[in-house]
Image 1: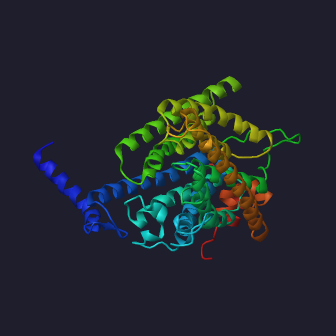
Image 2 (image 1 turned 135 degrees about the vertical axis):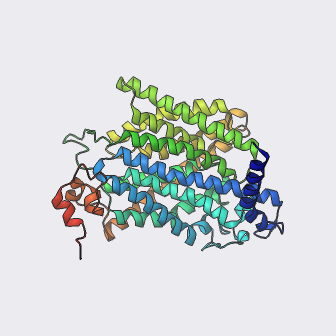
Image 3 (image 1 turned 90 degrees about the horizontal axis):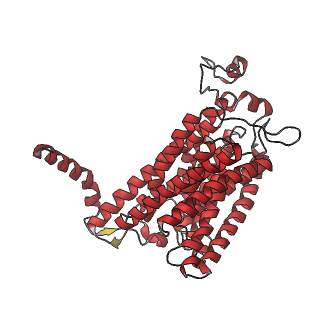
Length: 459
């Protein structure tokens, strides 16, 4: 590189770093003395990791949109924008304080309406050097992920306003309570439960709320015949779904490595390697399983297999060896997710995208397996039964809490504003009936339905 170009690049980098350096010149962040360089590097990395996790919202939108029918794609896009917006507000108002604030074994009671320079209100985050709002920003991405998981499982028949209400309250109270138990110094943390980046905190929580929502909502029209046998309702664009899965895979590197909330190189290397190996092995496991069962490799199962491996390794990525990531947090979840999708379909739990299996089941599986393969305290490494017991108690407790609170929340929403669209609206498609839009106007939608919902000029 020519010297002049190197000089320009160095000046540009210095200008980018100047705000972070200036912020830390007094050697304190949120009242704590730290190294200036550490503040700069940790804050920049944690913020960049948050950007990567935000990109996963686009991945979820593409996967869910591709796995559902063309007449509902606008509704899916709206839900993914809406749930992030609701999560941002709810997590700022109460959620972050409930999750990380000082309090008791069940919830935090300080630090609501998050402000800068208030790190002393969040003692569980005392080991990180990043500013308060950086911690809030990064953790918000996890909260929004838990909320958006639910939208795919409840796709094609849920009222938009009802989903917004759910997203707000799950981000305001319910997801933060689970997070407090495990990450915020709550009772499961005291029991010894480990969940590095949220296999249970984020993914199982989202998956079990999705299960509660689907139970209250019921299956889509035409999904089961008069004998209760499942009927295929194919998604409209598997290329879109594949793009979404790859975006999620990419964003997951920020999800897992960013959970250090600092830039520790050796830890980041192990986490990134384990994350990718588990995803690859799980995609292979799902492909082989579907190939054996259906006589042909199935793209939808392969995509969900990759995601299942990413979910399973999320809680263990910093604590297990790469070979375990491949075999037990990768290939095994790939097999299990195919069987789980088919099992839920058989008992008439209609989940159009497989979110319950990918996030709920795979998150629980990865959480329990960590009790066996943790390199310091796992049962197979001479650590005894205590970690495995804590993992099982955590999985069961979070499942019970999410199911009970989810069933109550969805039934309240159902009784107040309604949860499901009308049969006529479901048949016509939620794009027209809920939004007055058409995701693919060249295909056309019934003019009478569209014109009835579309605002007229001059009105």
